[in-house]
Image (cartoon, rainbow, N blue to C red; front, side, top):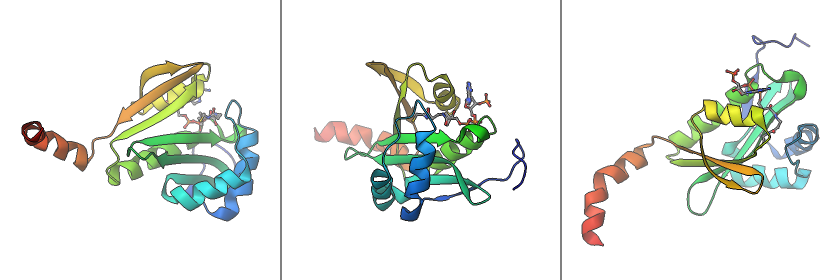
Length: 166
Ligand SMILES: CC(C)(COP(=O)(O)OP(=O)(O)OC[C@H]1O[C@@H](n2cnc3c(N)ncnc32)[C@H](O)[C@@H]1OP(=O)(O)O)[C@@H](O)C(=O)NCCC(=O)NCCS
């Protein structure tokens, strides 16, 4: 196994159903994240594979991110986690960066996440990517990021039309 460090090579790939057990195992040691059960991760793969990404080191799952679009079209980041041994080496950043790249290329314009107010590392990670605090829900902070997508630009251009037709 190669050494773990800032320069360690990690691979990212989309999750498969067969990864669900490894993801559940990892989630369970990543508090304060509320781990879901294997079956939930299997369904997340079935429904949202493009937004369910794994970070691998030596073929071992060391991190993951899952997002899903709502019926309204905005996207929720459901969970992001990195194995404690691999933290603060840029893995979380790589996962969130790729997720946002995919969302942007799919013309998703709004991304949201809810984070425990006390979860400083996560809050700081999302802030680094331009997420802004929107509201508090119990002990949770809802953060949001607007992506510059083609659709967002198009809406701006056509907005006078929309006003006329109302
Ligand atoms: C949040 C988490 C995914 C970050 O993963 P990571 O691989 O350690 O993050 P990175 O090394 O890519 O760091 C990226 C940024 O995150 C923030 N960050 C990461 N660890 C941090 C820490 N211990 N304290 C403060 N900020 C931190 C920083 O802004 C950092 O940028 P910087 O290096 O320029 O300071 C990881 O801490 C984790 O798995 N936490 C437990 C699970 C969880 O709470 N998930 C969120 C709920 S869904």
